[in-house]
Image (cartoon, rainbow, N blue to C red):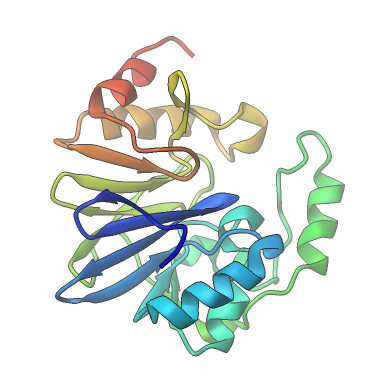
Length: 216
């Protein structure tokens, strides 16, 4: 599929503002996140070409769950942590973007298309999805999750990447910044080979450890 880059064995990525990961294994195919609404045509094409067995939404922010409604309309099972359900289905409207203007974030959420509650299923830490283990990565949101298989961790916005290494999201964008830092430090202690962030390219364990051990 055009525009896709391999980043780990059985893992490809396409940036739709946030990274959308395509996981392929003998157990099946999983999409991780859905990008923003402005990338809806590209995401719809991705659904047709990749034909996922399920879509995991790491958290409910619009840049990661913006096209979840399209996956639901296509009949793809949507999976997320129970703490994200109310926001992902438009029952609660809490969005920290833009920073310092929660009213605008709430308005954006209210105007956004969301899947229906019955279209979203619960998944949580310790569950497995097509050979990947679900891990809880709270801090950016309370219910943020990722997926781990061997030395590969799909980490959502528990960590971000830019040209000079690993970063945390800005404090204003985190549900609990202290918890986000603790999650990063816990992640740095894992036996990993590559960390796949919600934004930017793959990170090495050394890059994550360098950020985790720096005073915040």
